[in-house]
Image (cartoon, rainbow, N blue to C red):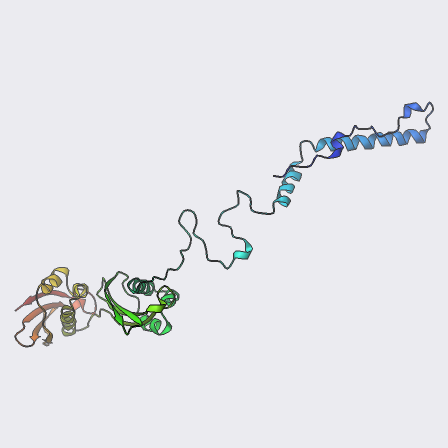
Length: 289
């Protein structure tokens, strides 16, 4: 707080400037009245000067408000000057606040960031990482599981890098990133999505399981059956193709026979819960014949 400048009135002797009336042996009534008025005036001025010694609380508060032209030490650290209203929010000292958008410089990480934006369900986030053609492809496939793993990356045409990913539900995604745009917005220019589908009929459901086996997509196989069934089949060599027979009803289940192609590559029998068709884990049993 700025110190108050002492008033010169504090050092004046009250009444020192008045006319000394005792030098006149016979003061007239008019001169006596003027002398009395002078005494009262100087006395009041002296009282006002003394009153400034302790400082009027209201005057002191007003002085602080007027003289403070910049933020004081007690100003909230999160307050921003009016001229910085368009600046990006800054993180607070305790780690809060909005984090700046990150654009990875490697194709693998850029693809993962793009998939995370898709899984968030926010088109505005996806717009940051993919061009509009790719965004349209993503948005046509709904909102996926967010646990993505990179399978591999490879050069594509000398100007792009293509990376393959799979999530915990067995969804597959192949993203192409433009090399010169890595580290910048909208580097993802093309995408192919193969999401796990849940058949409404027993034969379609088993056909999809066989295709997932051929692709060694354990996550998808597990979604169709159980972890133990998926592991048992993955321990064997999958046929290059399969022929699924029409299912037969057995109580609340369907029994489905499958012949591997080429012929002689194996045959299998699956039990499918009728009540679980269209959802996960409908295959309750599967064995080689």
